[in-house]
Length: 276
Ligand code: SF4
Image (tube, rainbow, N blue to C red; front, top):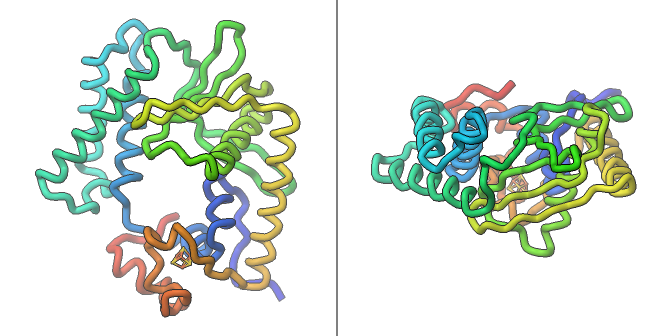
């Protein structure tokens, strides 16, 4: 007998990690596609990404700090009317602080590198590559060429730099990007840089055929586990660091909730239609 949950046909690196972190939260978000309220942290991250994208749409020589200010202002104007921002329900003073912090992240970017010297060939590129009957997808913030004509992938991070212990996890995402580049664009990137705008740290990974292969093995294993969970309708809660910020806690049995009520109650509570 097949399970009631459809097996997803494509996964992003963050979805893969989400399943490993907590299968039940993954079911709510990625299989049932229940709405989740936006969080200031993720909205600020998207806003800053958009500001930097707009900056990089300028010719290289014009990517100055004042140009970045205009780019962020344009991004702010877009976000002012976006549910991702409006549903945060910030007061005007809170919104001011939110936008001021976004600007400090853009300034943090300028402390790391000079954007007039970057030879980018793509921004916010959506890539999808097939593997074993499903596909992996991801968005590359910025793809550029180094002096030798090799690909460099840059990923902007607006959160804190990971501790040693979590570095391996965030780097596994990096090797996914490497796989995507190699499959779709035909060339393995020479380096993948995680750029932490708040702290100025840059973590550089140099993917090898082996690191890409290892991460593919992991993706396939996780996908198999996802398939099994769907077939057996068995998505268990896994308590951990994520519970604190988990929007689905009211329906989580680990916290005394009833998961069968989530499909009806989450859209009501969060005032949003289910995601598609
Ligand atoms: S509250 Fe924790 S255990 Fe429950 S669904 Fe959310 S992340 Fe999983």
